Length: 122
Length: 106
Image 1 (tube, each protein chain N blue to C red):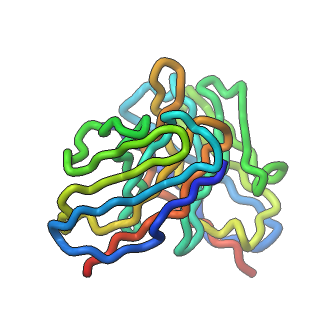
Image 2 (image 1 turned 180 degrees about the vertical axis):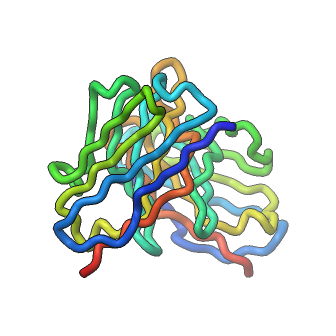
Image 3 (image 1 turned 60 degrees about the horizontal axis):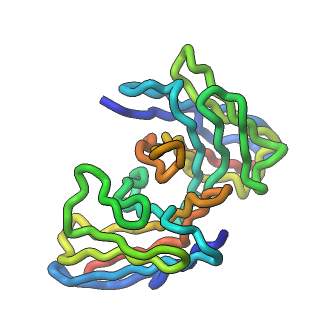
């Protein structure tokens, strides 16, 4: 069964750090780029970060650049998001998602985790 | 690239034909996907490359368009279709999403 399971969310004070994890199963994790997408309460979807299949390339949304770091451990089938200097506006459900590619072009995110809630509040 | 979805919400009845539009701020060719999201759940992929139905998605869902203008159509709305719908462009990084359309019961 193909699935992604996130963990690590919780309540954290502004300025503190948190690390999210996303464990993959049912597919060859090391063959796919992976993304983090977040959704603030009652709001739409916001892309946050991507990492290439081998971890050699990363890209970030401007809203998280310099504060968040995406990484992966292919030996553990696990994706991470290290979130530092958290702000109230980072409060959201964080989803990990697998890319779906056709002839090397990414055409969609076909598998999503259930999400993990991060609340930044004093 | 900005994606503008319309309407932001709509009320419809079971059996209605529903159309949602997504306009891109620049040409994205065919690299548009549509997702359905129900409350408290993750998004679910419906359509990719503007018009290709994802495996397992009912045929009442269809997509069309290219360039800057795209449409998601539900031919006969079913009770399980009441949800929010998002478009996403994957032509250029960052892969942006539209603001969403909430489909509610009339």
